[in-house]
Length: 226
Image 1 (cartoon, one colour):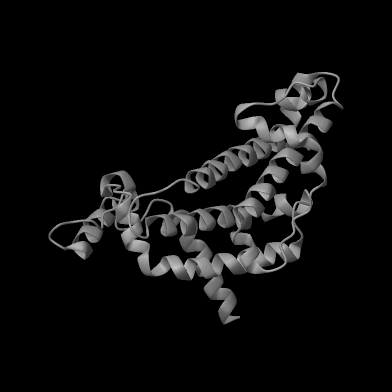
Image 2 (cartoon, rainbow, N blue to C red; image 1 turned 90 degrees about the vertical axis):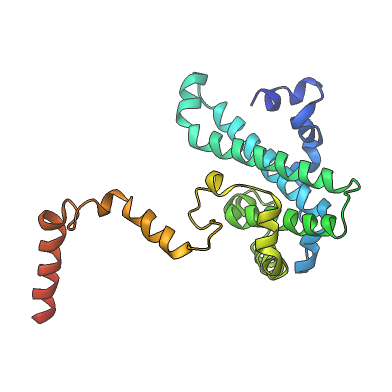
């Protein structure tokens, strides 16, 4: 919000907010996607994320200006401010990912796989927050549908290498909270043992079943008979 409030002063935004220096363009630009594969262009993805983040920030700033007391405004608009902050953070991650992929990356086929993962990540975010992109007029519903179509195609490319790609990041089973990884291969035994650690399995009949669940089940049985 501080950066947005300084846009009219002539002070050029720097760092992670540098994209806000293109204020006029970001408020007027329209996504030019016509085919699903157009979403594979880094410039298209980047512009959509920049426009979304900037327009959400501008909307918050306009709504804040309606409050005589800024503290009341921040309190009242905290959900919108949170969503704008999320959009900004997601833009940073996507832009840094794209920026890194412009460099040379050693290893046969490594860069190609990272490009696919980058597109999956960006389009997954777009799919998850489609409402933000559409309501801010960054993209049209049809372009959102094309993004989902391209995302499904990307999933089919990732799927054959999914396990290898996960292992490549070298996250331990402890870090992931997984009980599946074991050297002796006794996966089902480990799952069974882990299930017994669940608090719901401390007793044969879970707490609250006789008091709450059983009467409801009996009532359903009576109703079904009637």
